[in-house]
Image 1 (cartoon, rainbow, N blue to C red):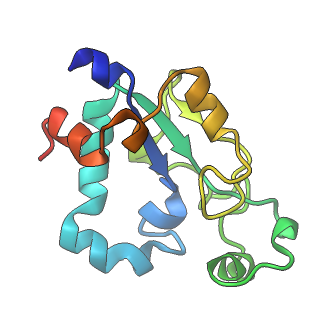
Image 2 (cartoon, one colour):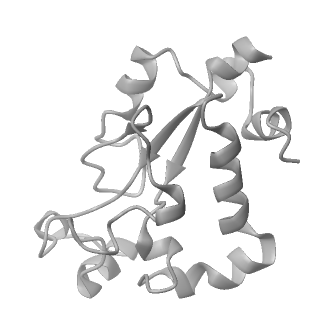
Image 3 (cartoon, one colour):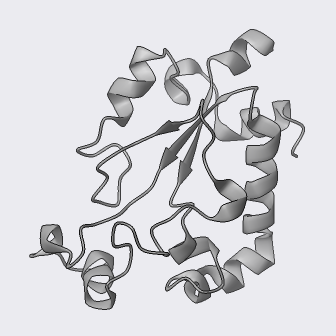
Length: 151
């Protein structure tokens, strides 16, 4: 099991104040579901137990002030632009205090879309470190959660 876990990465997507902090612009939108399933509490606990046992990879999403890279976007990203959310350097774009990266964690840079893989260096970073998780390795998120004792 230890060898398998050392080849595992936990991908933490959008663990930023806009989503996780009560003052974040999107917090209210996820609050009902998060309360129902304990999402925020469970995520903090999962990261705490996983740290030191698996690679933690953070994939924040942020945009330049003014959101010029979202000129022709629609859907949720149009809402991000209209509200000014997730502007680089803002409170909302910073990591939630209970889920801040530590020095040995990886941070995916330049994420500008919904996917943590699309037009980012995530795939390259994971392959360089031979940290490939999921069907390719024959393991699922649920397998890792069970092995970390978080059932």
